[in-house]
Amino acid sequence: MPTGTSSSEPPLTVRRPRPGPPAKPEDLRRAQQRQQLLRTELSRVRTAAAAWRNGLGVLLAGLVGFGLIKGRSDVSTLTPAAAIVVGILLLLALLAGAMGALWLLRASFGRPSVVTVGLLPPGPVSEHQEALASARGLRRGIAATIACAALLVGAVGITWYGPPRAEPALLVNTGTGSVCGSVAGVSAGILMLETADGEDSIWLDSVLGMRPVDSCP
Amino acid sequence: MSEPTSERPTSLPYQEITGAQYATTAAGNFEIEEYKIGILTLRGPCPRCGAMIEIPVVDRVVRGVSQVAAASPSEASDGEPVICTCEEPHDGRPEGQVGCGAYWNFIL
View (cartoon, each protein chain N blue to C red):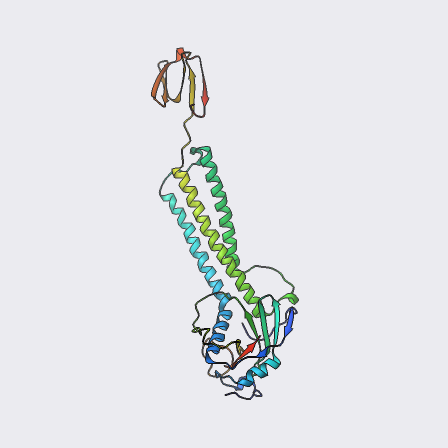
């Protein structure tokens, strides 16, 4: 990379260097190290991006393994609030995953932009800028993909262990008072309700009115 | 310690060498071009082998494992160390290295 000359955009400024102090072997090593880092940085970033992309892909694929351990899988069985939280987490996971994938692909393969040839900086500078941009994309891609995995785990966790939706309840007015609970069954003219105090049997003849409620008062 | 610069690039063997006139000669022929803030390019002919070289001088680089041992900043001289980075063939050049072996310091 750091050799030869190339046609390029005009530089912002041009000046001449001044002779420095006598060079020592340590200066040679320092310059060699810098040049080697510069010469290899784009290929190192690309290689690292490919490795991270594959590794994070395996991590996300591993989340499918959650399906082997059965838990609640239907958000409609959660309370509305918990279901909304799960929905938001899944949406954020989708966005984070998509952004992470795009950043990792950008780090691996670059951006397919079309530029004016005359505006390109010299090759070594252009490669260095691309390496920095790719490294930035790689860091962002890693963070976004890990965030995606964490959000997915959170969504699955809430789906498994979140508060269940309450059974539909019936508020029954018997004239002597109201009884509220979920229907356990009806048999021989008797309505059996599961109430907070246990099972309650009500003669249907005594019922003056009833209405479904989301939860008992 | 230095050699004449009139020889063709390919005729010189690789040799890690410096000399006071390298910095002086190169300073007269090199230009510092600034393309973006913090990114400079040194452009000019190598004072030893004469190959035209272009060296980015940057303040940040993507970190990675380097096979070259780092020189401690306290051991290095003040100034910007520069090496020839030509890719012309020079006999005896170690694997993975570039240039003819010439090195010197600039004040940027």
